[in-house]
Image 1 (cartoon, rainbow over the protein chains, first blue to last red):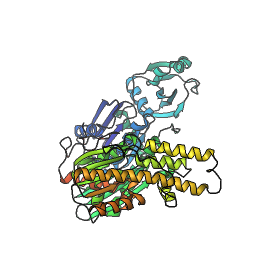
Image 2 (image 1 turned 90 degrees about the vertical axis):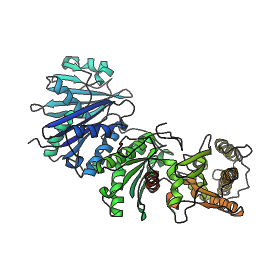
Image 3 (image 1 turned 180 degrees about the horizontal axis):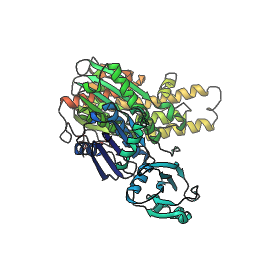
Length: 224
Length: 351
């Protein structure tokens, strides 16, 4: 089954991450890109593609982290995904960065319900809750959203695993739910690596878009 | 050689394809004017959001217009600066990504270099050396152009760009965004000598410009006229607005023409090219033509649609870069994404 050939690009935080799989090979490079997330994106892409011996023309699809997060970073990932997918004539999987972050948490921790939190700045947070459905498959329980951490109560009563740096940024938000948390890891970032498995399911389920529709999901739409 | 050009430095999404044999074979442009109109100016985040929606469909359309496939291109050129960084990054990333996927060079282009080369796309292209007057909403500069890639900035604005002064003055007169062209239209019906506004920096030596003092002078005059009831809804207010527009425009045009002639005197050149949005101004063109003719010189412009930001000039500039060999800090096969908000004309990209 695993003849899936995919490239994934994630740039919604300061960690730029590119991953690829081809047959039974897979590779992943992370780069603390700081203020210039875009500059090296294609050098990382070329290195990862070479690592798994994959030509862009042989891709099945391209995945990218569509946000939420840095507007500029998310657009860089979108533009990179659009260009490679369109140039190669393949579709795109739009993957939530919060979903990818939950995927990273699942690789490192035994968790069932993962509450993901990223600092959205300006006193707000991006959150979501993902539920482990299969062995390693995550489905959204609470969709990605922008909240006021000073007031937000996560609906439900299930035990949660707290994942992501947003829990560090808003300690009172964490405290408000501390009874429900079974564990916490704030040193986790969205990564392209778990996007490959997410993208494979999306690809098999036909949940892809044309390159030109590979657009960001900013969530925060009030920008003026 | 066929080059795809991408421009996203401000509020126009532009794509052009230039063929060294056939000339310009495709040109697509989407203007965001309506998007920014409610805000009275360009909102950078909205500009970036629109570029990522519009750019790839424009690339697709341009290739279809030209009857080309991506793989038949020689290179992809993109505006690397100067401009709005978020907006630049969209075009730069998409352009470099296409180049990498097609296995062709990605060429970073200086936005102002593309403007000053735009008249070379015309049939009566001038020969080097020449003086370039670049005037737009973001820039006002005089450049000594000795050849492709050989530029020396002789003077530039110390504050507002000429087009910016046009837009701000238009706003003051209550004209719709982006006022510059509207103000020029209104000025056609006014008296250029009704109000005497300063000709900034004309009394001083050198080739620099300054337009913020002129803008203030107009503002003070408008306040005065408002206070004494001459403006507003009163009868005759429209005529006064036309006179204000006309007198303001005359001050800008006199300054641009005066400094351009000074640059020609200083270098001994006979050829002047004018590019950028303000280069389409009819009064500026009339005056430059008559002055240049009387001294045996000649003035050149890009076609009207290539005065303002566009992808065609980026493709053309990219083609020139290919022909003359890449600057030392770039080489084909390097897919670094270059985007710089500030980038001095004539300076290397890595500086």
